[in-house]
Image (cartoon, rainbow, N blue to C red; front, side, top):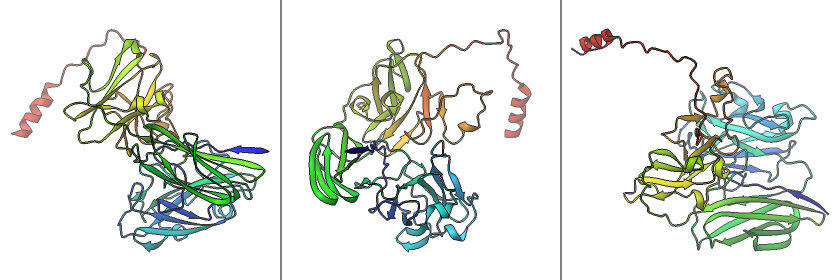
Length: 403
């Protein structure tokens, strides 16, 4: 028996679903030769085009087996982002819904034979490109392309955002709640749904299976679907967080805003000023960008600050990190001395900044902070530098202008 395993860990949304979400599509398993209908809901995701009263266009290309990163789009349909090309204009369906067909992606994008199409990449925009629609975290939108005739499985609910790489999905659930899950297959099969390895639904000779997973613990949860057509087994999974009760505790003595290094660089206290929020995680290289009980932040008694201590750090390793606030907002640390920018770091030459830490592509989105617990001291090249005196005439001139 042949077994194909397709594991997906979803963060802040990542599979590609066809029910009432940011991007709906048909057929259920589109191939490079399919006539694909996509429906974009401008009220979801980043909502940059919500109620815009404007024509909506798609800026689109493909990710192929020649692409080197999520941003390495190939065969982009019209490079200009600010021109209203007729062949990439969507039809308004009303109520913030917009639709278009992509007939035969290989032909539509002009992908040569022998190059495999993996995903269709897209950003929605208005005519002049001043407004755009993306995922909630401002990442690009991706639609998977399946191999013709291959046995495949995917989830259709819960609804998640169509991101490039699967990471952890943030689902608002508490202990005692149920999570409704539906999975579909490309052909009739025996299907089994599990939560943390415990089966909660199964059936034979079906192509759709739904079930309710009972949530009994906090922390990281895994939902998996396994399907077998008699010869091949395919699997897919996603993970999501269930928040525990927020602990109220005073900030440890000596901790400052941002990151405070302790225990000779093997631990760090993260402190974020975020009043009025319900929950905060710190995510980063030290926990594979997945929140969990160890990174769930405590709230100070005044309700203004959130803090947590992360242990097991390597003093000489540089770590990237962000804060995940209320399950949807990811922000860099406002007190960090260094940030990584996915859009602009590529323009920093190695001569200006040698060995710049790589951005954690596929694991998060937006600006991230970076720190080294015990950084290597900078060796000054000029030891007799004399700072110029302040030009007092500037202050006199400013005083004159004020008068």
